[in-house]
Length: 447
Image (cartoon, rainbow, N blue to C red; front, side, top):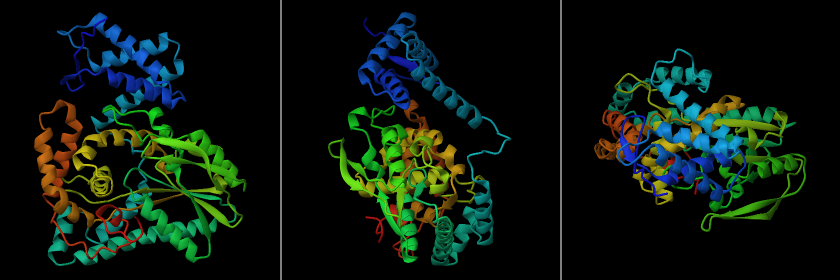
């Protein structure tokens, strides 16, 4: 049957081009979440969805996005894919719930926010006159930028030092330390700093590179732009990770796979690894707190650390600056410097990164044994200098694009914020081992 559907109506009312590949990706992602990796079947099921839509709509009568999702559910159930259908339905319900919560004032405290840590950081910000953009600008105007850097770095270092002490207190039973957090929260630098502190105290570590557990690229789920999604935990071979962690915790030898990012392929059983009695396994991963990552590991033998830039500063609109916006800018700078990835691409894809972390990372933040804040109040001054004008241009670019509403909202919010912050170009006061160097460059510990 010839496809008559060329457009679809979004929830905002915008009319956008209809792409069958997005249906394929949605079905495949749901299948991957329950252990399936059959792309041919996903494509066949998408064909059936399109057939249903063609029977109900035509080139003059566009389906709504809800109509498309209803058809996907119907096809999955009728073809006997109950588990995949359930996953798709759950994902759809979660998305609807998030939209509902964003559209109204929620009187309940968000359970995903580490409130105790937030109050502590807010108290610190008030004490140091860094709880508003206006106060930050006043201190910069007084020539106190270097002092702000020093104070901010000390706050972070105190967190890392306390994490090291808590780990040492549990060393009798501990076999592994998992450092987790959403994208650009500073996991790499923090992992190195934590290891350095513990090595100085006489402890030994072995690092497990979780990237080697990625499935072959051809089996990766894709995002709605058709790009391979490395953010989802299902991109990793979670059963194999869990198996290896169990065996390593028992002192057994395992063979770690090797992943080649150039070819997008994994080779199994490459590198031998074993934990000696006086060694601890160190893991830096987005999904270290995800339940299936280490579901068979006793909580007594693992220490779970979570990172997030928990900045407590109000912008000119009297609202607190969003942590996700800080991480977006960090990732823009890092991707451009180290991955030849245009900041525009990072912005356009961020809502998908955000969707994945809201589902797979942040809900588990309060299962951590300790939380480190990697926020540096002074970093906003660099961002105003480096990207302030760019966000103004992005705001103009996406203003009337119905396919880029999320990019427009983020660009508009940050354009308004950064134009009110005093820009600083000279980063010489920033220590070369600072967590911020991971993103602005010239780090002495991250290469």
